Length: 469
Ligand SMILES: [Zn+2]
Image 1 (spheres, rainbow, N blue to C red):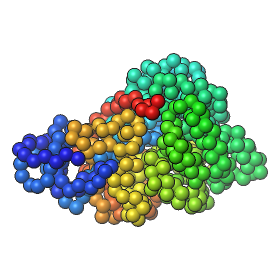
Image 2 (image 1 turned 90 degrees about the vertical axis):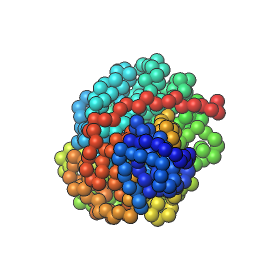
Image 3 (image 1 turned 45 degrees about the vertical axis):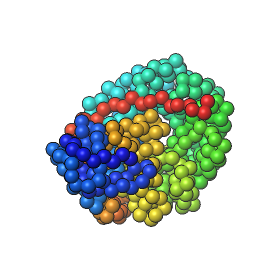
Image 4 (image 1 turned 30 degrees about the vertical axis):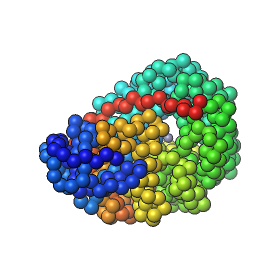
């Protein structure tokens, strides 16, 4: 980090705070010019500013980057989730998130480029924070569009090993061809890894035995479902040389596989979500257990401990939310068998304070580790660093002013989603984002939205550099 002293006119000055990035904590003042971080300095002289924020006692983080988000989720062309890009991105801003990466899903047989353009059309001009897109491939048609998509700023291509009943999965043969092509074009793949045939087998068995309560959702996708699929795609990645990013790891076994692959120097990375750390299978047995259905499902306490340990030792690189918001009504109000309930829970607004409370307040990780997991690592992997995810001079002034001592009880009433429930209701946390700044503009301040509701822009992402090839 560079410290300068001297006369300097800035648009916005944040003074007396403690700056936190992926490398350390530094007391200092930060000045912003034209939306960029322009100066960082000690002391009390040599500057003038249009606006000054006194951040005494507060921490200043680079904006949080949530690289796995589903706003305004569509299924077969119909919007099925409760939020829009507008409402979701605004809620995200309240949570200190300044960049999100959503998905453009290819409909089988159709052009992924068209899917990407449609998704951009839906989001552009409606987002409060900056965003980008992954493209999900659901068949091998139009593989020749990958280079164009990469030119358009998409570097990451999602695949599913399950959801055959929704025509989303790629078969093993298709996966290998897909990996080869993405590798050739120097993109990388992001995998939702669950064994499709096991999921179908267990699910059919449970339903035919009339075991339809929410807990049986977890039983229908046991640990082996994740472990087998991850092991298989790691093998395919090993043989094709593509960089593989494992989405939402939930099990001890899955995180152990990631650790092993990393120890063998494979090009691999992985993420987990706050709900896999904070909630477990018990959440399915509460009266409103149906609300907590997502895939992969919640696990056991020993998995929670293993995931936390693998975050601590940097096996798991990132925390993302897989945010996907549904109303009670769209989740069936508890009247549906588990296999008919829409999968997904909200998370983007609460991830920073929850993870801070769970891991930093308990001293399991340090502040720089928090920034690595939630800002700089996703920025690096997804080709946005150092423009995003850093406090370097010249970087976008995407910042969170965080009060590490503010105590907050989470409830739907204090959050900004479109729903009246939250999986973390009554969780008490210490530490809360106070002010969120996007490219120098204050978006949220002390619980009020004060910025442009549509000031976010699409971010073209950089090519992954296969240094080791
Ligand atoms: Zn997802």
